Amino acid sequence: MTRMDDTPRDRLGARDAARHAAIALGYARRAAAPLLAARLATTVTGGALPVATAWLTKTVLDIVADPDRPSAALVAPVCALAAAGVLTAVTPQLGGFVDRQLSRRVTLAAKQRMFAAVGRLGGLARFEDPAFHDRLQVAGNATHAPADVVTSGLSLSQAALTVTGFLGTLAVLNPWLLAVVAVAAVPTLHAELAIGRVRARMFWELSHSTRRELFYAQLLTSVTAAKEVRMFGLSGFLGLRMRAEMHAIDRENRRTDVRELRVQAALAVLGALTAGGGLVWAVFAARAGRLSIGDVAVLVAAVAGVQGALSTAVHAIGTGQQTLLVFDHYEHVVRAGADLPQGNRPVPPLRDRVELRDVWFRYAPELPWVLRGVTLSVEAGRATALVGLNGAGKSTLVKLLCRFYDPERGAVLWDGVDVREFDLGQLRERIGVVFQDFMSYELTAAENIAVGDARLLDDPAAARGPVEAAAARAGVDGVLERLPDGYDTMLSRIFLSTADRDDPETGVVLSGGQWQRVALARAYMRDERSLLILDEPSAGLDAAAEHEVHSGLRRHRAGRTSVLISHRLNAIRDADTIAVLSEGVVAESGTHDALVAAGGLYAELFELQSAGYRDPVMP
Figure: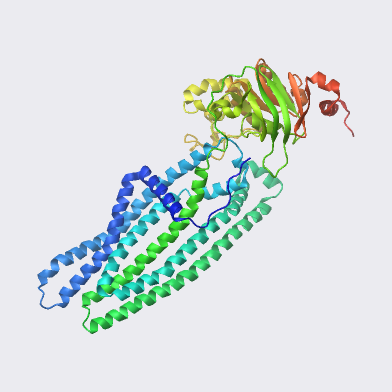
């Protein structure tokens, strides 16, 4: 099993940064081109306004200070200055509004892209890899990163316009002051970049703690876990574990905050000294007659404007770098590629057999082998049962049949063709399955059954007939029909449908046995599939319900290719072939009678179970 690279980067090269920025801009353009254009317009306006305002102020002051200039000369610059003031007040508000709209649109597109990429993963390997979950945790929190990259880029552009205009002003008034201000910006830029790298690295390093905190929080609030948490008094224990993760996260954030505060304070002092020095020079230059009152005003505005804009630009660069580093995790997930080789060969109906040929499998190179050379044939039109102790490899074998994993050695063959050559979606369309750890979805009763054939989910009217038929075959139709809204009842007390919102009594929680039958009904939705896999289909049922379910399954399996797994050997004794797994190999196989007569592991297991019904109860 190939794992993802779990080594994060704490800096990006210019090429990668430019590529990520281009990707983010492409998201914004595709998601909301008009909003992006509007935001560009506010960026240009916001960048030019401070410079224009400073020069208009200089013009007005110089006219006012010159007794030879007529008052009429003030009309145009004063009106222009008033208009600039209105635009200065309005532009940030308009820019903020557009930013929020653009951010939501881009974030939505980024989320859709990420979950579509995760949905395209055909297997389970990445979902059982902790490194992938850490990447996914960061990527999930980084779906806003494309919007943040665009915002940082626009802030940088606006600041660059302002800086360019004011630097030109300083160059006209005092080139030496221009050099001092530019040099003072260098440590600011360096510090912001360093802080951005630290925050991005911290974001990655804390992803595991963040995921653990979420895990404990879900246990404390989960309906599924509520019984045991309360019965065993686990609230304090889980809460303590959650607080420990929260405190670890808080410590790292606080350490970084303190470091950032020290750097920012030092930079603020440096900026104040630079601005103060410029002001002192301007005052004495004006007193000596080298500068006008307007020149002093525009110079003070230029020094302050350059420093403010440089601070904004440097912060945008630092924030942008941090965002790009986080966005790198997002891109790593969405561009990770398929976890299983994708064939394109069409999958024909099964005619002969499904065969596992010398299959070896383990979940990771550092873990022990689960299957050690399994060879097994599942004959078409016949029932094959898998038996074995816990950990023998039965569920792993089911995962290979469903192609959630590929064998590390050997092959799974469908009528002699390696399943890796087939289209994965078509292969799974040929298989019906009831998993031992089936899902109970927070959906309506009808939808919980219709998920067995997802093509019907978008057409409830067309799905109703097959859903009710499947429910009847699973013996759960009576239960569902008696629900408050029948098949349209939400099988949840957590999420209510729109119709249920005003009547919370309509949300219903089924019993474990009822859910088992709903899961079985899902398998019946795939009635015409080539291969039926039943992994403990009667777990959680009482004796009468178990007998009823297995009687129905026997009728359903007749003439069909099926794989049946059950710890209750009485439920699989009529299978055409029973394969006994032990320590990752097929230890023996045959019919029930033949295996009992052989006196091997199956006979031992069967004797242990049957003895429980024969032996008298000890006092």
